[in-house]
View 1: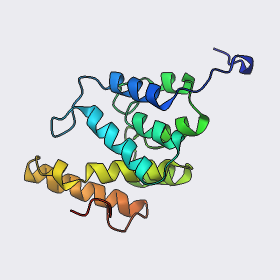
View 2: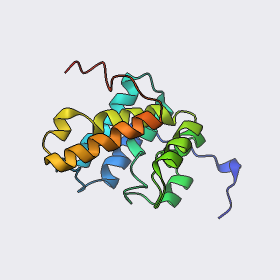
View 3: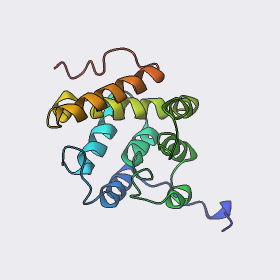
Length: 164
């Protein structure tokens, strides 16, 4: 398929991106059994609270869509989204067999991606979310998230805004 720039489509609005993401992940749940859209909403709000722009918020809504097979990568490549939004989504999409160092390197090399991943990690590591998991899973995930934060240079407190 060839792309013609004379037929530039207007970019999807944030409410449209949110609706697409909610539909794409409908029926999916997180590790705690909660509707997956709650995680997407929390990450999008985390990006907004950290000063992220509309392109980063759109990427937050879509950050797990390709990885979770909710939307095909081809859809993302052809979607009416900015190049930056697409690049961020692809940067935060884990690839099969990819080590954490390579994954972190790609995030750090992609403008705007670090903020989205920071919001994702902050929600993933939320003690209230982790509390409902069994101890072995909670310990494993806490270590995994801490390691990724370190690889990304996010060494400060996970979220000053929560206050406990």
